[in-house]
Length: 401
Picture 1 (cartoon, one colour):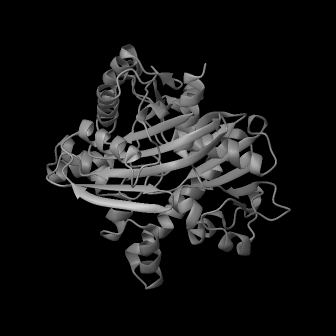
Picture 2: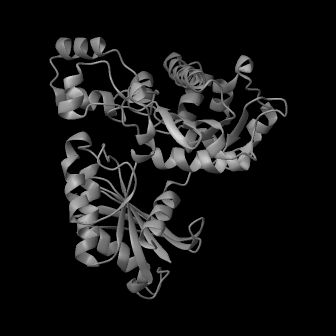
């Protein structure tokens, strides 16, 4: 069964076409990215059979973008299928499912209305998903579709983990609470990394660290998320590429008052001008931050150390929540590739039963591997994430019921 996975942002569309041999096995046929949708000139990158196609062209809206993707998939030169009828279903990544969608669902008009009702909770993300869903309905009417939510995996958190200590009426009126994100990634690496370490994820305690430009940590106990660092929005928690992470709201209001910023300007500040970018003065890539640190740049040194410190602090906190851990997972662009950051984070955690083999850590870049020592009580696993596979898997399971 061929399944098309779509991740639609406000001005971009990421896609993958996968051949699902079964619920647990797939082959990637093609993937790509459309950027700058709605601007004067867009960009289209399509990868297939080890080759790459790139072009610049106008992409006025998501419907036209979807048509470009589908035309590429059946194109005689760059395509991988002969007919669009070979696509059996479409899986859509949706950022926010709120409390309405604790699990992935088949898409119908009621589900679309539900996603629309949550736009206020994810104004930067859910509208793009909705445009992608509507575009697919227009281009291939009647094709089975599923919505897979970033928040769903964390719906198992207990109230003491997801409630904020604000007047309870705001939870009742506006559903203000911790939702958490990166759920598809945390679920995937928890299950796969545990198996890689010879353990059953439904019978152990796992701390999963998704470290990239967006970063979050989750505590997974017996196959269920019990804590996660992102909150009502993806701003809370770790230091990120351009997001603040944890911030005293008093400081937020102080800046707002002193600078005369409105809420929109403050939203831009905490989402796009903070994190590594804000601390270093423009560097978002951890490799650049590391280089600056090695060259004596004080602000890069601050940024590097702050990132490591915050992750280390959350690891300790989540092991406390679960009364220990059996497996610790590193994933995401930084978690999978930046061995030097893993070293900074995992150093001096012997008292928690975490011991790292420095040579294995340095040699494990971009691939799955165990980097802890044989006598480490906690097995530390580097495991590449594959969120698109989880979306395809959930879609497969829903449409083959």
